[in-house]
Amino acid sequence: MSAPANALQPLAWDSDCLGFGVARLAADALLPDELARLVAEARAAGLRLLYLVVAPADALSNASAREAGAWLADRKVTFALPVAPAEQSEAVGPAIQATTTWTPQLESLALQSGEYSRFRLDTNFKSTVFTGLYQRWLQNSLNHEIAREVLVFDAQHTGHAQGLLTLGLKNGRADIGLLAVDAQARGQHIGQQLVAAARQRTAAWGLAELQVVTQLDNESACGFYRRCGFHEWQVEHIYHLWL
Image (cartoon, rainbow, N blue to C red; front, side, top):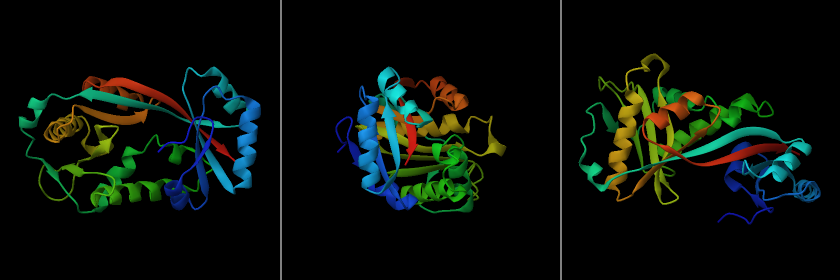
């Protein structure tokens, strides 16, 4: 359960992965003095990094974050798409199949999906942090720890996938976690076919909406999702404040 606004929420998974204390801070009209108090509290608890989550329209909290030296690491956007029950009967392309098997190509696709990841762009992280996180994300998706299904597009059925999509559950919706098409196979509508398969799975699971999270700065991804029929549901500013 999320912590209330303007309170520290320690993040055990992030802390374990990164090797140091991390907490989330959902800001709401956060004054600079209050943020300074929370930063002091975080330092006393041995934390090294705060994720400040701020609504774009919250001018006070955004200004407080900047004044404290926080870096705007991500303008996180959640897209949502209504899915009709009848879509469960839609045929899924023969090149798309479910898998639970790790391959070097799937790892490459997972890493390609994170081109705009804040864990890759924040130079305060070691270069191995981004790769380690996305490798773990893929593995935990394949073993169904954080995804219900992993779909691949493999036109020749050779085990060398050209596309990857992981699908789980979040906020009462089907949730696309990782989605990538290999750089050498783009422009062939592989992404659209994977999204169509995700729609079919969403309906088959008895859910009415499909969602996906990306970065507003990733204009190509945002354009792709809009062309697929997704609409913008929520935008959040994610700041990194190193302590």
